[in-house]
Image 1 (cartoon, rainbow, N blue to C red):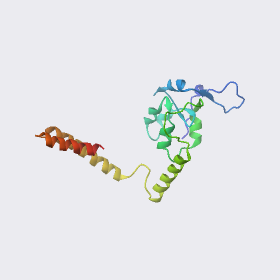
Image 2 (cartoon, rainbow, N blue to C red; image 1 turned 45 degrees about the horizontal axis):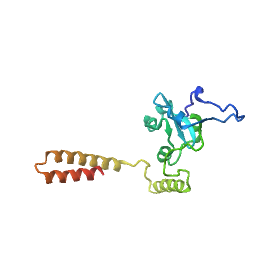
Image 3 (cartoon, rainbow, N blue to C red; image 1 turned 180 degrees about the vertical axis):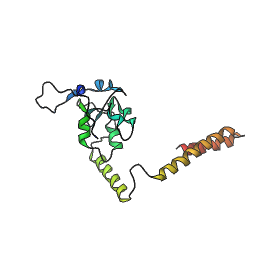
Image 4 (cartoon, helix red, strand yellow; image 1 turned 120 degrees about the vertical axis):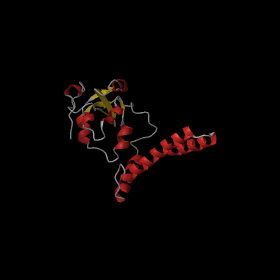
Length: 176
């Protein structure tokens, strides 16, 4: 589903003759659009308005956590297969000013990252596994949460310090 951006936010570059050129937006302006009622983020140098799209985002409104910042790392991490370019273009309101990107230690445009994503997706396909995991992940999560809380309770009611320390260690293992 394509969500069209609000017409008022699609600011064109006044000096350019290219009808597809967008306004250049700096980090300071991007940071001002950081609320659920006015949310922009940058993805691969494109500034997109995610305000109305958040209601339709398959992952829920957690997309709003990216509001006001460069979300390239988040975007590439959660979308290893990518998303339709037409969707990103339909939400685009500008381009990020050159040299203003996220403070990541990684180069997400590198051949290493691209190859890594392809291999992970290929491996999951070969094993016929879903990207987000199956019922096994839910079983593990329930077991770990149960172990954590059980250890926490036992730690508090332990009659001696050594027993409390043992339950504390068990709680740490479950939390890790």
